[in-house]
Amino acid sequence: MKVMLVKRVPQGGPDDGWRSRKRQQTRQRIADAGLRLFLEYGFEATTLDAIAEAAGIARRTFFHYFDSKEALLYAYEDEVEHSFRTALADIDSNTPPLQAMATAMRAMIADFGSEKARKIHRVVHSTPTLRASNQADYERLERFVFSVLAEKWPEPRVHLRLRLIAMVGIGALRVAVDRWRPDPSGSLQEYVDESFAALRTEMLT
Image 1: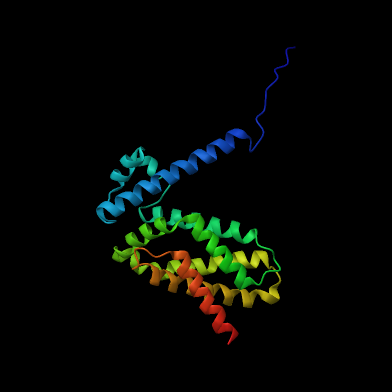
Image 2: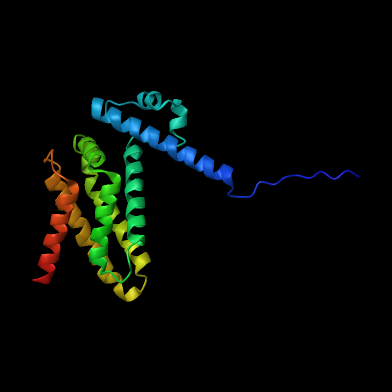
């Protein structure tokens, strides 16, 4: 009897990694195409057909990656969150949590880029429906930051403190963004540094 030898591909092998990278590249290409069109024509006037054409995909393919036009902007939130989580993981756990959060946020901004952030804010603040959801975006970011801080400092006794740190830290970020947005030559990093320096000063007085 002839025995057939079947070569099995291990789960999570090179092909899976390649497909994952390819999907991420396509997702980023769609998001970038959408952002360019939003800036040029406005969010409301940009159609899914236009985004698909600019990204070099079929219209139906769009929905394999995003549920809506709004979801294109949330793709950048995923990038921001990944950068923050990575930066915080590299910080020594003996660092005070507020200082660690400020350091991770600074690294996140450097990684993401002020110019990209400015473009996204231009789209959001020029679109009434997106502008109205801005408060919810900050609340979602606050919950995310608390969850990442709690992963690094898992002791329940410090979670109240971490929740407060996440709240005031996102507040400092929000003040920095509000000050930076109308300043065409300003650095978001500098405004964030100023906000956290003022926050530390107030906490010590």
